[in-house]
Length: 309
Image (cartoon, rainbow, N blue to C red; front, side):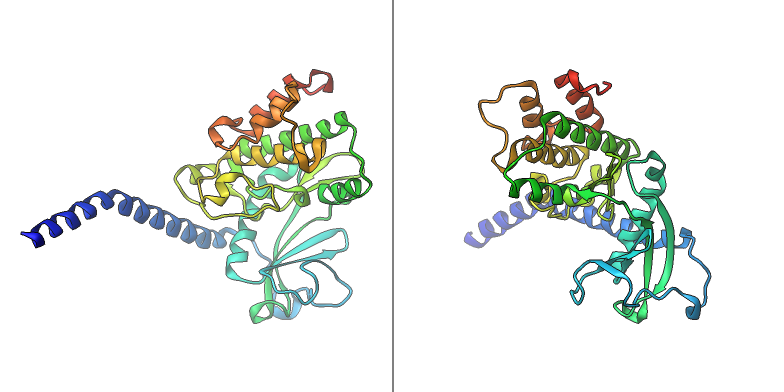
């Protein structure tokens, strides 16, 4: 009799676990299908038909290596090539990210808030396996990253004028609204990936972690992406990504620009404070659904900014 009850309990546990097992299996199959789709897309990428002897050599000393520091190990190298930046993939996984970035920039580059991309090519690189690497050449954006700005002003214990900081946030949200409107999510938004050019225009860079919003809705891309303290809470819990995830990161940048590391004071019930608190809400459902909605809400919160709602 005891063994029958044990068997019944085990059977009940198995039955209760079947839906979760089915869900995990479906997600694993979907992830595998996406990886296969990325590999198949490589056939659609137009690469120069060059012999190995004529490939550009990016191992030469005159090139300025931007990331990582010389001698460091990483899947991607970033080097300065005159007026362009060369992003080199050293592993198959990094190649897949480069193909994604190439696809996204092809949609967004004409908007002016992103680097202009110059296409993909194979180059010689002694750091890569086999001595060759896939290279994405992009416009080198002159200017200062928001990370450099924050480090500079916080060292001087000063802050940017509020309207200037809000104007930067408005540009960032407008640029993200174009990303979301094209059906993509950046997923790696932090001050190092936001450049302010000398003309004052902001450029959003590094779309290597970008993902289609539609695929995120289907439960794909649940990996954690650490964005230097600006990642949304759902990243740490491997929850689903959404356009609201980018809204969190953008508003977290806005909080840092306007209030520093201390964050929005609890006593600040101004329209701007309420806007930033909603934008950085823990549950994604409590935030603005996408950057377009956040941009319009910011225009309403700060009417004197001159942002068109």
